Image (cartoon, rainbow, N blue to C red; front, side, top):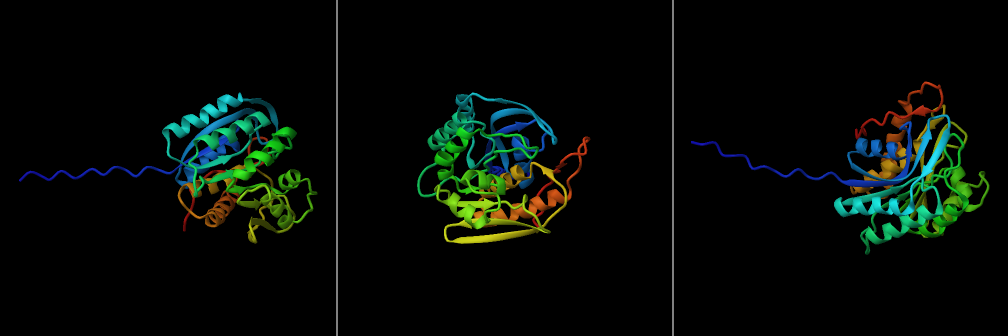
Length: 278
């Protein structure tokens, strides 16, 4: 009797997340960090490059920005062919690119009652201290992009710069001010604060939830990029925002504890290992 052929099953497609950010030549931040994070979280990563940098963990030596229309073309190409389930923005470089990103996302992203998750990491200053966003772009970010955001993920210096407040302003106030832009939620990252505990604060309308982690000594390259990318990846997988933030924070702590030093002995580099769900 002939054997019955097994019915072939079509593999389930991986969720897709799109990062719109700058390229980091040393691979620890930016587009490279985002794509490595997406892979570690189990999501297919697509990208639109806004700028190319010559940088390492010690300095940003040069930056070449893309044409704003070309950034939009990259976004359009991804949405034409991929079922993008979440978007993360990082370094947008200037006002022209920021406006182009807003315009293109408004055109291609699904509309209606349920918005496509948009995680905005307002990358303004590299860990090495180099500026990555000009003043006009900051204003455009505030007026045009933040109102579309599911979550904005500034560190304390970025939150202070965006709101025009001092760096010692309490995170609850900074988060409330950023919510006034129309963003649905704000995650104030506490890595730049002092103390034995790193306190991140998730602020939504009428509520604030603290996430506390033991502080690991040293400075690290690309942690903000990895954190926001992990949140975007988990949102692409359908997790609620608060769960995505909590799990991403725990994953990031694993990466920081396993960080290694570059040849220069400078900032630690994350290994981008697969998320441990146990």
